[in-house]
Length: 122
Image 1 (cartoon, helix red, strand yellow):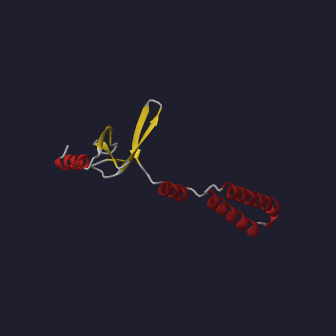
Image 2: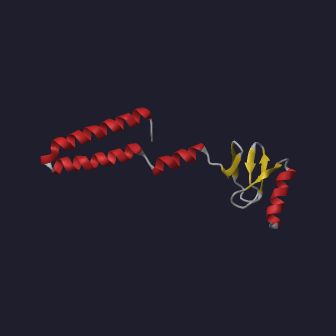
Image 3: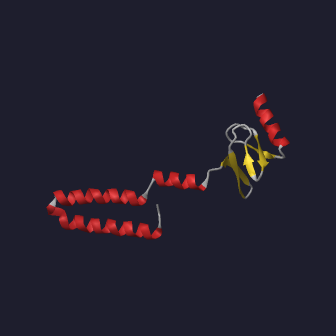
């Protein structure tokens, strides 16, 4: 271990932190419990210890808002359905021969979008 990492760990101990038996998954430093938070003294990031039965996993703690934002950015179901709807509306404008089938498809997409809104899935 580097001297800086050790001095950061000692600093936490002097502040009253408790050294835990778990280690940082990124740098392997021991984790500390300080003011209700599990912290890596080297990475200076908050970690989360997840226990499922006998299995214990340590991972970077992400704020709920960041996770929700990332999920929304990665895949917005309603926006995806609107894009499909735009494609079918363009098809309707250019292909009158299959208008009846295209209109049924558009109605189905609109129904799906409405259900997504009711379920509040985004």
